[in-house]
Image (cartoon, rainbow, N blue to C red; front, side, top):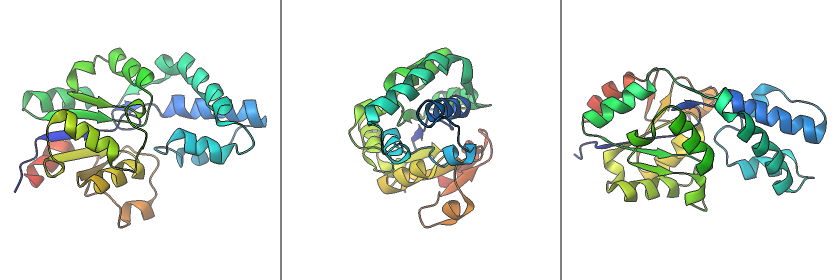
Length: 218
């Protein structure tokens, strides 16, 4: 049986708490286009979905380029003030590197704000590979972003674990043949999604749980 040697991470909602900046950016976009905000629960259900797809559904009467500009300009201005690092994440990444694991980041976020977050919390050097939405034309739940990361890292799906907070992350990992782990601080998946056939292989409650999972996998 292949020994796990690689751990992949989603960015938003997994490594970085970007919930506040994402919600604020959506509410700003709703106010600008529709003149009113929407329920936070409606926004949370979009977490993990490619943003162009979400924009087309939310604002079918508005050109995607226009709604994206409103959303991204707000997020660009407030990103540094509203993002935080989830507890134990930096320590987990340091320990993984010290114990010989390869680490990768696979995100549907654009490259510029991804690296702004990594640089703010001094995480850039803790990832051996970073794959953003700018690196591929297809996105989660398609497995292609994971395959790109695995190629960069020189490893195989059966030797890899992926952590994520949405069912897009979990389905992406499952579609790639990677062991999927749903983080317990996620706010998006429903109970039905978690229990469904596309559900995760494992659920971890806090960062320290990962090594228990890795030991169980072997």
